[in-house]
Amino acid sequence: MNKAFISTDKAPAAIGTYSQAVKVGTAVYLSGQIPLVPETMEMISEDFSEQTHQVFKNITAVCEEAGGKIQDLVKINIYLTDLSNFATVNEVMSQYFKQPYPARAALGVRALPKGAQVEIDGIMELPSTN
Image (cartoon, rainbow, N blue to C red):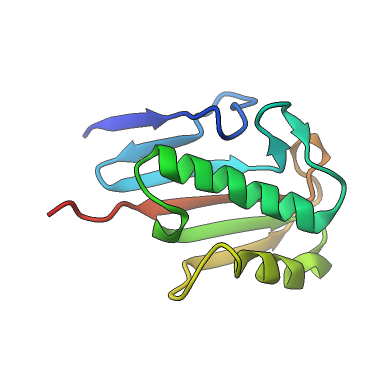
């Protein structure tokens, strides 16, 4: 089994013992992204909507580095420190995906790294080159 480790400076550098993504065959497993601005490694803002947009921008960059696009995600997990922000996640997500949407789970969590309000990870299936 061939594994490729994905890394791009267009998404925040890993802040722990993990890779931004790992590609195995045509599957790509994306690590969680929080709303850090890649150039500064600082939180985009305290605004939840802005944080969610930044997370999707970071995920997009990792997908593209792996050879795909955000629409190739087949499953995402969304972690929220406040589930009352669920409607905002849906509104922001609709700006990055078109139907059919990926499978998804949304979970309420007590805290996220660096005080983020949202974190998203996912699994991408790259299109066949046949």
